Image (cartoon, rainbow, N blue to C red; front, side, top):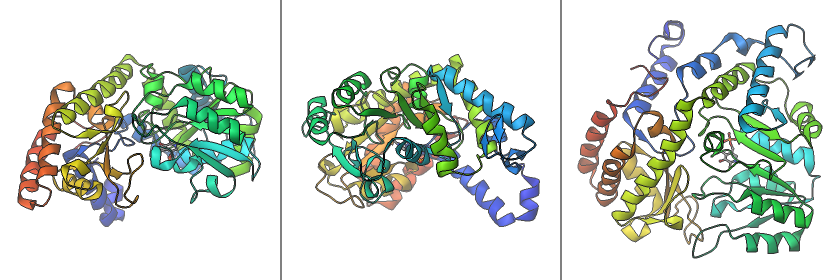
Length: 417
Ligand SMILES: *Cc1c(COP(=O)(O)O)cnc(C)c1O
């Protein structure tokens, strides 16, 4: 991390800020569930000379010469994605998760046709039809919700809405949903109404790859994902499919939506997929869920109100208002205490998205550092103390010192301090 001599010479300001950020990532307990620590190998591929090459098209069908090695790299990434997720077709070119979703819309839905996804306030993603996003602007978006008392997706409600609205695609998956997705149940509903099921596994791809969360395949013909969340690769996206819509998807990504693929990212995706095939990765994915359950339990014992009562995956959603604080000041207090999370709406939140009732926590990053169930009660205790003393900067600074000291024992992948 510190060995970036050319950068230090050319641009000491940016060099210094990167070192500061490395130190910050090292000294904080990072609980933002969409974040992780990519391995040194992934970082080396990302920072490689593959950045220099333009490769519009697909392996064997490029619009530029000089693709001997790039074609091999992209083919390896595709083959690894297919093997890891057990699918017939993979497109590894989407620049990130949102463009992967955009490509699926472009491939399958005409402007004005109906799309159906989980509403943002209930844990869905912006790209699932939210009104300020392209998906809600260009398409007729209808949104399902979660049950008001259990906070679980209720397939009866999903089916009723699908039968009434007859969407072209149904998207399942979310960004703040702590429970298992019933892909088979969604597939039955999609079949009943003649819709195409799209599973967005951006958050849980690493868990799916390791067999810790059920796979969307063979139930959904298409799944989209990011490559940088639980999958622990570079910032990127993929569309995985059973091949039914392979042509449409490939054409939608290029030339429909994007120009040249980011070859350095493609190589790093290939590396991350190789890592994800190992027993080490499977252990990490299992431990991520075990840690989330242990952290949820410890927080529950301390009186925190867990949305849906707990978690089945890597993330935890908490309504902090019963503790006499709102989500944003709680997240800010935690930050001062060296614990990083994000404030978040909770289902049926009476408060506004910029000042909501909840916080969202996740365990992928701390698990990548080697933390286990043993450490979760201590982290819960710090969270409890920070929320309790949210107005007491001295108390928060004391926690922060303890947290920084604690973090020294858990090396962060990709960061050499
Ligand atoms: C993170 C996420 C995305 C978008 O990914 P970006 O890489 O941020 O564009 C899409 N869908 C879901 C469910 C996500 O959690």
